[in-house]
Length: 143
Image 1 (spheres, rainbow, N blue to C red):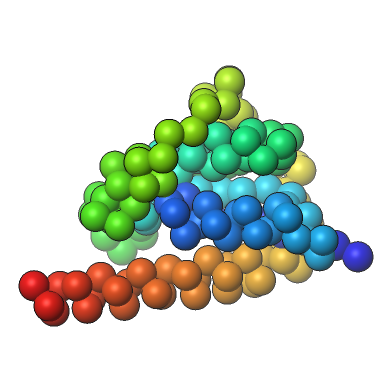
Image 2: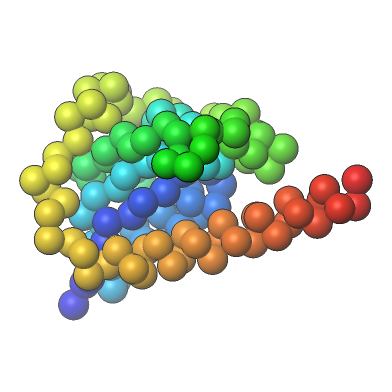
């Protein structure tokens, strides 16, 4: 039995890895993905997500572009020293055709009712993101 997963991410290197694991898992079915700013901007995260999905043969997964700025502050520009300027460590991906249309018209009706997997996906991505926050704090303290 597979659990439907809605992944909320900011697709840099860590979220790309989490997405790959989810797509390969026999226990999960990625029902939809939303992107927000974090490692990269929400728009670049959505583009990276679409390109990765196409590369993985999962281009039918809907992607929704989320907020550029967090609720309590403005987007700080990501983490290019970790993820590179493209968010994927400067690894070029073949671009997914019609990406702008897919981002603009992400299928909200397809992702309703997938709350069961939300906690799992958030936990996986959250653990990876915590590692990067701790790493960045250590990098700053050593500078």
